[in-house]
Image (cartoon, rainbow, N blue to C red; front, side, top):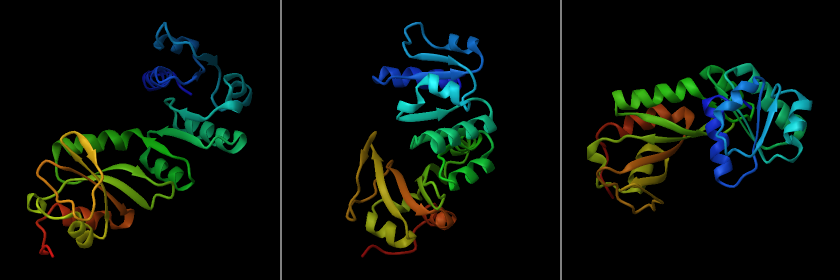
Length: 217
């Protein structure tokens, strides 16, 4: 739902990967953003209207993305699709980060545009810190790309996990993802991706962005 720049790009990307796609927008002129080669359905109407959704093929849908420019429309459409048609893979774009947190707790995955943008800007202005990559539907568990103090280089994953109470999910190394073992040693220029409880995030971030106070066993 929504054929703005995000919706049009998403639709094209899905179709390029071999998926059948239907795009819903209440403004028929919006479909001009799709390429001339787009072969999916173009349905004019409201994305939370049942007749419109049925016309778009919601009864056979595997996934639904609500990416219009209205928070209320996006979340209403996401709830209708999930609760009425039983589509499990639903995501809604939300501009208001406070609303996004509420809907995450209701089990509706959201992409908070404002928060994502501000996080990316902050990461470039203030390189030390953590940037959310995923939160579970309850909002209690975070996967975050976390910067680390240079003195953590040479320490093992086991040491990092013991000191922070977190789990190292994987490392980015030379542009590739690496599944770390307890004995994996952190190297310079590694990108550290950490699983943690949301409530522990400030502590984990503080520990990793300061020199370690523990010795390797």
